Image (cartoon, rainbow, N blue to C red; front, side, top):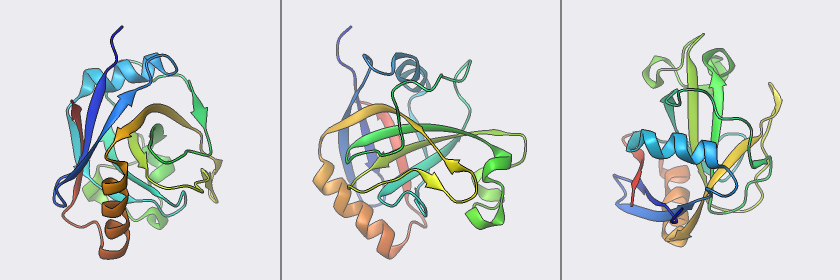
Length: 166
């Protein structure tokens, strides 16, 4: 199979990076994401994992991918896939409200980009939260990391995170 690439962008900030799908390590997840592209939604900056931005989506895979190529310590440039029940993210502590589509009984997919070091996927409410590493940024991470830091400091309101085939 030929290498596959996607473009990950912060629309309002006009910045993007290119990531290679890790078909050799997470083939089921890569196929599920690839078939669902393009995807885009409101961006959030992590509260717990540190240097992470992500968007939430309704479940899009015919069956949920297994935990292939898992990590709890993502590195800069990792793209991770997480699957949650709406109940897991429904607490007011997370701050999603009704606008994000998070509700009890509804599966939620979190597609995340980690842009800097020292991430730990440990949540005080549920414990370890392993993610599936399905892509790695190969171009544009420095510019994206700067934009992510700006998002952390200036806020995410009005910004979207999009994923599409390169």
